[in-house]
Image 1 (cartoon, rainbow, N blue to C red):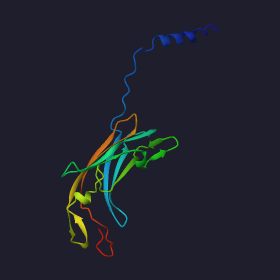
Image 2: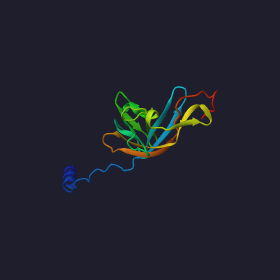
Image 3: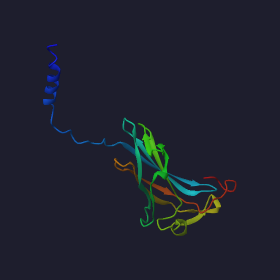
Image 4: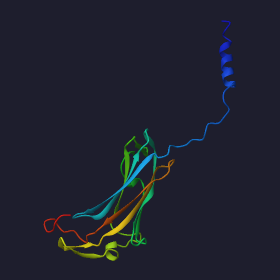
Length: 193
């Protein structure tokens, strides 16, 4: 029992020689996300539009899970005339893939998994004008005389989104070319595209 005083002495010594230096500032890992844009021209009986998907892949080796704060925008701009553009402001309504818990407003992305954000462009610009009425230059489609097809037009899509308020924006850019049809013609009447 004569050594019972050693335990409190050890605690005092340990605290007296502890470091008074501050921890280094926190640095969030960089390069958390791989970002990819894709577009698809949807032309069928009910649709004549472009679907734009922004994929945000988790490249980090840990699961990301936090309160979702989806903000950002996707802008589609004509390469020929940059005054022709369409802007989509992003919100939680644009999230179509991801492990999202709406009750807790929590988005979880496992390593290698992704969140997918989607907008659908119906060929209107930011002023509400229809591009088929003033922008596209149409000719008779040589494969189907019952419809018109536009001359090729090039556009650039710029997308940026922030999934969590404590992280920066994930962004990407994509250029694409399109020939837009003026109306739908049944595959029974014309060669399907």
